Length: 269
Image (cartoon, rainbow, N blue to C red):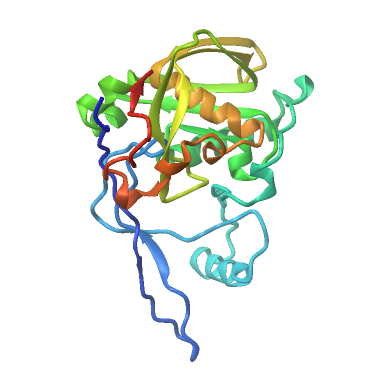
């Protein structure tokens, strides 16, 4: 089976002139969203500027506070979490289960709402709580007809990719339902700008609790099964690069280049 091509773009920084004597670092802007495993929305060709906000204190935190005061005249601003990047310990250590008695709490519900917002803003089709710096076993995932429509039809057909509504799963437990596997490229919001081929099971079963604490069971196949495996890996402190076919690792600019000699072909094994 020939390599599945993927429509994707690279975010490029532009220089920004500061008002200080010393030059400041370029401020990145989002020219077009990526089209990949986590990011699937239609490209936006009008540049959209964004500011990097983290849950940890940074050297620019005071400047951000001052800017917020000037813009809002003292009004408290809501800061949305940003995805944590590879190297942060929270992504490389097992997450903790959410205690049953805390599931309906305001704190847990706020975490879930933040995760959904971050996933959709990226845009992405899945997110795990450690990706916003919270070491709890919570995953959210969603794939829509709109997202799928922007990928080549031959690609989505090969991936067995179909739309599904928003899923919120706490304390998920995953098991494979088939020995059949498939090889496709994956990306991750926490390893931005790179892709690699990963072998995943074609059919899985995931059990856990929904956001209200009620039992939930998901039987998934194809691309949805891949998303579930990817997100559950995050809860074990595993990134896709820990499971990738190493010689296929590449930047998004080189995604459509041929696979190295000796690498397995993409598709169902």
